[in-house]
Image (cartoon, rainbow, N blue to C red; front, side, top):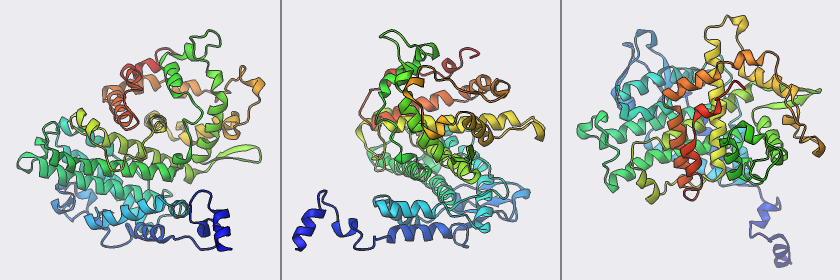
Length: 461
């Protein structure tokens, strides 16, 4: 009888007793990881503190950081010991490999951070950018470290355990980077690090840092919910990107065999938008679209972490040919959809950056919120939340704009031009090239080579 039951329940070779709910799932790794994360910023061991002289000693991050007297006694998340880092990564990795544990972990990461954790998180964000600047020491070869800089955390913001996890992973990454580059640099001087002249043994040490970055990207992808979205299952991605690269008029073309018909992908895009808007916290309440503030903030955090981790991983000053001969341990989750996920993260974070730039010279009454702008747009275009559109309406599909939206976004072109001068376009292209190495070669090389931010804003429309 037992053999018959097993044979009936075992079409996929899984643990039939577990799948049938006959035994409780093993959640040990998820629970252990959640407990370790809950301690971050809550214990003396996990907290660092700026000294009375306003400095962080060299023993903490590998370089001394002078923050000034106004920062003295400020708490922050201290880097974890290597053993604790590995233990946490092992637990998280095991949890992600189990569907039941992964879902439990994601629920645990939605829990609010404690007051002590919020203080440590704010201190970390306040000192992080100064720390990275001090590590760079004005050396252009270490410019890639800019990809780890953090957005400010306001007093009283609703942080979650997931926010604490990402902050800790970023903090550990900086410490590991300093340790590795110090070891590989002439005389222990990071400014003399030469990524183009590494032995195989030394390059393997650098790969450890890149693995850290890719692991952080994977965690951000999972916690944001973006990992479960099938961006490429129904899209002809090559044709879509080629159409976008051809300019707006070509995208909107409805006739001609050589033109890209955007109407053909509208049903798929609307299905994706339903999942994406839910991910950022949008839902219908009494016929009105509302975006949950805390979920939106977590969404922004994870998009920023996902983007910065990938840009950091593929921004290292190492020879390009190494990427073709080595495979990073944490690159397994990179696939075709990673191109879209990365570009999506760029759009989300650059939009947030533009809104902050727009607000900087405005009176409080004139300032706008990215969340409220998106909420208003989605409320007027609820099809992006519901995903519902009749087949007959595809050709006549039009957006309903927000009132006075042109005034708000008239400076986008100039903003992106300034960002491009800071190296944004190059960073995007380098990251896309890095991703494509792990998904099978040169499929998008021509498109990446032709990518230019200026082409996206070539006219007023």
